[in-house]
Image (tube, rainbow, N blue to C red):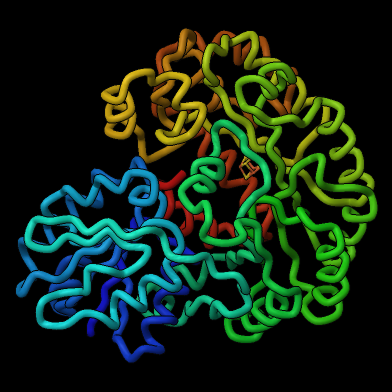
Length: 468
Ligand code: SF4
């Protein structure tokens, strides 16, 4: 069977890459399609029998348009299957006339089972992990069991994607994931709702073995000459013993610089030293709000200001640069409160203060605070923007000023003396110049982090500018 994976992002998405590997092992022919020039012509020529899309809430309207195009212009019309966060949290997307099946939760067990079951009548209707539509009726199966041993999941097959999109191979970093799940329940995060959906399906928090992870890093280094790795786990340091073992193996076999995410109360001196020894160049953590009370009550995040200061000190002492994650426009936040976030960042001196506009994502506890009635949830889903950087669906008192402050956030953290000027600029209407400045500062940060050349950064920017 010919299977087309369609994705919006010009980067490697681990989930579809793993599914690609599993489907190829079953003998299917798999190709990726990204929205570059002429991609619809190439998709038509491939004439897929199944089209699979990984979809986030916010990008779903565009992906549904793509599904409609696929059904209209590819003959015979392929089976259209959606997976990823949006159908997991909003399975009713299957009601769209151009969607045939949706995958809820993890796809490694479900997708190969679906593909193997397809015959002249379409797929079987009783595959765990899928809601499947046949002749107007929707068959709602439970989520598939979670994969207990993550080492059984193959290393993501990147060759297929890189063959058709060499630009992605040339990006100066590769992404890796070493585990799944998070033990916490922050109000703005998908983890709490996902735990509810997957209850009874197996252990939620899992980790690959150190050897399996280091083998993948070695493969990336040898096969693609990888010079930097971005470990994308929610909390890389969730298990201190794992980190010590990882650091030893990674330092002796790989030595490729990397960055990772931590939670400030899940990193001690020993862990930071181990990360530094392994080649960690940047650690990223969620500061989110400079108001501790806000962080605890609105965000349900128990990390204190002192935890943040202590973690920053440890990292500075270990010679690891810091990137913070921050949100502006939290429920009820004023410009003055947002400035507390700027000030805490200024105090701990991150190398880069990444900032988004808070999105109370439908399905999260934060979104529930706003939507009392079911029709409001539906509105939230439809209005949710695809980007975190332009606007927010949160009702904001200081909307325009916060949206402007977001554009100056990283600069203001780095250069506190700009505050009087920035306070004047945030009063102006939102404009493209502010957005361009924000993107330029972000580009400079990326260039320095992965030590890429200017031509490489520029070509990366031109391809990825819609994402950032
Ligand atoms: S610690 Fe991070 S990944 Fe875990 S629930 Fe909170 S925001 Fe989500």
